[in-house]
Image 1 (cartoon, rainbow, N blue to C red):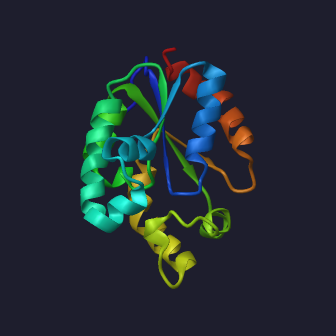
Image 2 (image 1 turned 90 degrees about the vertical axis):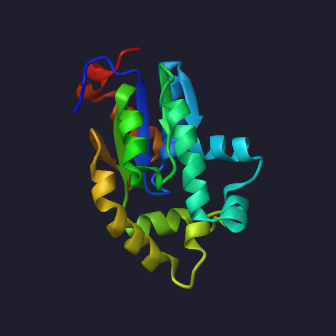
Amino acid sequence: MLNMGKSLLVFTGFMGTGKTETGSIVSKKLSISFFDTDNLVETKMKLSINDIFKKFGEFYFRQIESEVIEEISKKNFAVISCGGGTVLNPVNIYNLRKKGIIINLYASAKVIYDRIKADSYRPLLRCEDPLNEIKKLLAFRKDAYNDCDFSFDTDGLTTHEVADAILNNNDIIKLLKI
């Protein structure tokens, strides 16, 4: 599973677990590039994720996301924050794992809900009972999220605390070729 000399740190996890902010902090502390796959999809499509979902649907979004993952996974010396559903396609994880250490960030459904309930740009949570939908999606994605090299619980922690925990993890640092 893990090979020596990985040059990418890849953050996976459900929305609201802190992937983007934590990844950005880690990249700055390591002085390496940072990429957010959702932002890359939006740039490629010249549309917001909400608009992509509205105009083309989730399936199309996932296709574009996979194209972005295939391209970004070829980079060296970078931190990548993946959209919450990236892990649903095993090809995405295969591509990211070639050079990357997969780090899953997780939190309880209630904490996730509290963090994102005010966000209007979460297309999968536009429903009558978002907390219940979070629980369903977490259960559905559980095995995919567990297919990681390391995982960190972000409940009750700031993104800086999570970033520090990652950067102070000797097993991760040993694997990282920077």
